[in-house]
Image: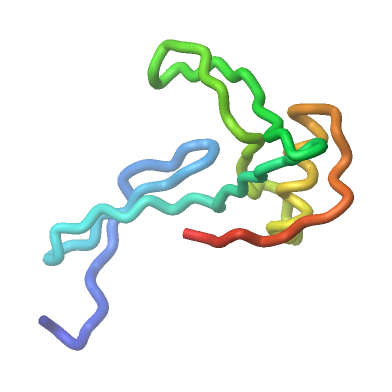
Length: 100
C-alpha cells in the first residue's frame, strides 16, 4: 500500500449524504452527518413511534431517532430534540447507552 493518500473523486452530492470514490483502493466512502436514537421510557414502558419508511414501503414501529443536522448540537441534545419532535414528550434525563 502506498504512503500517499488516495486520489478522491466525489461522485454524488445529495441533500444529506455525499459519496467519494477512493482511487486504487476500491472504496466508496459515504459522508453523513450522523444520527442519534433514544430509548425513551415512561413508567418503564418503551415509547415507540410509527413511521412510514419508503425504503421498505411499510409503516414501522421504531424508537425515536433522527439525523444530527443542527450545527453544534450535542448527541444528547439531538436525541432529546428527536424525542420531543416525534412523541411530544420532553426528556428529563439522558443516559448514553453506546455509539456506532
